Length: 95
Image (tube, rainbow, N blue to C red; front, side):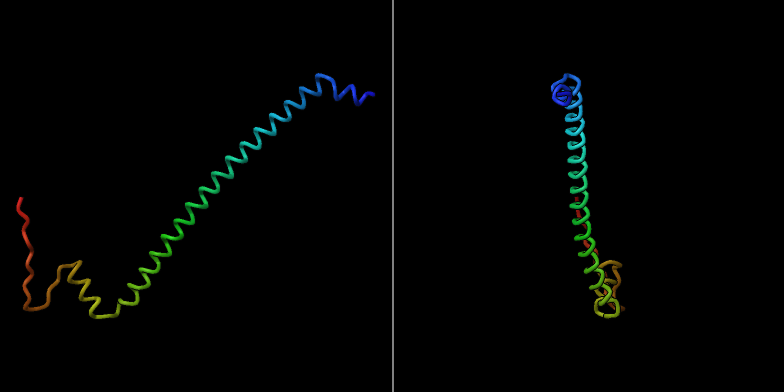
């Protein structure tokens, strides 16, 4: 009888509503935190993919470091170097 009176009382109903609101807020906050973490994981996967591609390119460059033709190609392309007796022609762009 006392338990039935307690369950049907206004005080219990107020406590139940407060508890349900509290649980809903906690659920929402946890949902937002999980969504944020999933986005971070996705971003990290993308960064890992980019880093692996860069690592592969660097490994290829490292293989070519001792190759004289590769060194010559880079020296010509990036440094503008020429072999003895060659002339370097630089085109002039007109406005």
